[in-house]
Length: 280
Length: 268
Image 1 (spheres, rainbow over the protein chains, first blue to last red):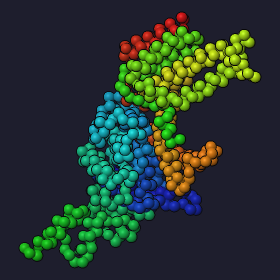
Image 2: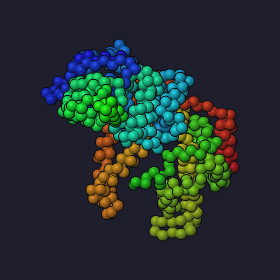
Image 3: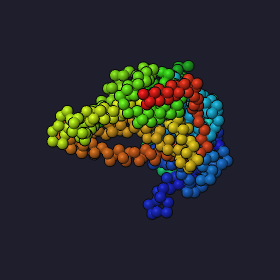
Image 4: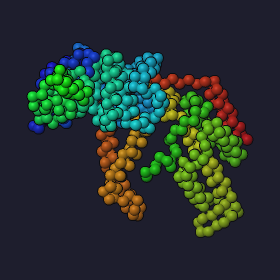
């Protein structure tokens, strides 16, 4: 369980031009959930990642992960519970061969060799990297590198996996496949996932969507609930996926559509129900 | 500049899966050390002739084509030739042995002999270290170094950390080359001609790429540090190793063979 209570953070505290990056944020994430955190640049979402991984500490309020307070004293324990994958894999991968990099984290934990070997094996398998385990990382595509980074995070067996815009440098189909893989992992391993993104498109795949703006949480709910606030989202510069936005406008014109509409399939089903409705 | 990687072979790894590739990296490092010592002890052409046979044998067993090494060593060989020519011309020999003489330049049999031995010695060292790197992956190499120098850890020398610094430095080479290429292309697109002008002008243009590269280097180092911290890295202490190193009997046999061979080459 991640418990964030009244957390504030500002860079350059004490100076006159200190900017609050987060103000009085409350957020609880149960274990095993699949949560998207969406916001624009400067919404505070990246700061949130830094606080959750003990890179920075809150200037006010408390964060607890599985009951352990995130502070300087507990930083190494926190990092065993939370793994993070950053935007650019070149900044994250340390070793130069695939399996050696996946082993880097478990090696740091001082695990016995057999345990490391087993974790490397299962992480490589989970991301479909077994065939390229011996390859040099510099020879891989950016999508493959990002998979290696995720495998490395997974080998830590974290309670929560935090993804800090790992898909923003990838082509859309590759990004979507990656999110699907992560979803699969989340279900199988019961590992909580916090996916930080500015892409509304990916957000529809999640259990829960948290929208941030100027260091505050402005919307929080299932994708369907959040997408209903089309105007509000547009005001903070976020676009609702086309199908959801179209459904919103049809409803505004008095056309009755059944159910939650997140994507094309939902919309098509609802529209054909409308068409066949009056005739029946 | 942009073809840096193709023309310099030193430091590359080529996996042919040969017997030498599969040898224990520590044994290979010790063998390389034996070669280095031998190259200074051996001082005549017969000795180097015997060494040459062993180098040829290593070359064949490694299954790395000779042409590949020669192509990748052009810069090195040209440089070596340049040095040797100077060595010969300025060698202060005895008057009776001069073959040719002009002003302060001369060619003497002694000069040729010394330059020949020096050349062989350098080529020998170059070939052995190049073969070590061509046949040993970076991780094995660094793990081998780490294990060999592990006793120094007791003297409070941070061996683990130094080795990791080395690994990371090597890792960043292709990343920086890519970045330099990108910056060069971006400037070319804005009309900077990198392939025109005199040497000084060209050097100055390339110099302009250095500042952005330095800045990006610092940013990357900072991000990587953070990433390593989040991956629970807290220094070499308490780390365990995923990769197992095991010297097989055949590895020890190779070491014994090389030692014997070098002693023969030294004594004849």
